[in-house]
Amino acid sequence: MRSILQQLVPSTLLARVALLVVLGMGVAQLLTYMAIRHEREQALMRLMISGVERDIASSVALIDRLPAGERQDWFPKLERPNYSFSLEGAVSNAAPTDPALARFAQVVADALQPFPVLAMGQLGDRPDAVRMQLRLSDGSPLYIVARRVPMPVSGWVTWLLGGQLLVLAGLAWLAVRLVTRPLERLATAADQLGPDLQPTVVAEAGPAEVVRAARAFNAMQQRIAGYLNERMQILAAISHDLQTPITRMRLRVDLTDDMPDADKFRQDLEAMRSLVQEGVNYAKTLQGSDEKVRRLDLDALLRSIVNDYADTGSPVTLDGAAGQPIHTRPHALRRILGNLIDNALKYGQRADVHLRLEAGHLCIDVCDAGPGIPEEQLAAVLQPFYRVEASRNRDTGGSGLGLAIAHQLALSLGGTLRLHNRPEGGLRASLQLPATR
Image (cartoon, rainbow, N blue to C red; front, side, top):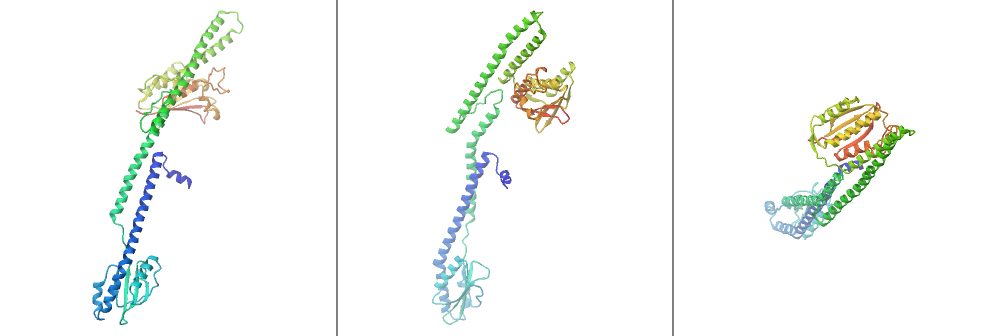
């Protein structure tokens, strides 16, 4: 039951608040309508009690003074919508049980004095009419059927209340929209703040509370960008400065021919140089890119990348086609694919690239035939400097930055990068990009 209610409740704040306001106004209009109906019923009762019983009593007095042979002819002239007369009939039903009808019948009976009411009962199954039997002065019976005539609410009142509800609902939706639109702009700006740390300035306009929130959000974006930019500059500076002593140490090893274990020193220095260089590249990735978004033939780009690897004898294959151009940053996309293919070749001996369109997104899968990655570490390997001990160690030369760089660049392109272990063995790196023309 709770899940059904959750499905019926709208998901957006605009729809929820608007629904609550409209329901509240609908209940208020319904209560107003019921109050009008109740007031009219009360007014009708007062009117009937104050006038109808005197009309019936006057008609009975007139009938009593008429000759017995002329009474029947006067009944049509004396009848009204809420009472009529007859000389024949019977009271076979019980007294009315409805409080309003019983009160009405008692008031009429009191007004008929001094003519005695011999019997009184509800007319058939009608809850608004009562039959009375009384005796005239000459002993003749007279039957009266008295009805409570309803006083319905005019149709234009119902239409008026409905029109008011529609107008108020429209104004309520507009008011809620004005309140929630700044929240929507803030959410959009937050989503657009990607790894490249290029802030989207929110317009500081509107009510005072909205202006304050927008100003605080803009300042927060600037502070975050400043803090991270400072950290990346420190990382880049340290990595850059380390290249100089590494180069000097390499020269000294090369100039010393009789140095024991010279080859091992060269390997360690080369590993250090590679690690420092990748640290610089990762810092540049986080600092963002000035590359502009351009129209790109993705099929041609992938064929070019695969052919380049094939020229070096690397087992790289391509399957599938986009069939349409996309708008993206070509150099960033090429670097992502290069890192994924290099990773597949290094740890999986081969790289099979699959391209497909799926639900409005472009999916590029890079599969290998390696040992894969433990399920609990699939997300962790996308973090910088994280290496799986079984395959990514110093002997293989892994620094733990290749997938991290690809992950950050994918986010900067508005896409995602996820890793999955293949059932048949190996790892599948899935890059998903927006397939907008």
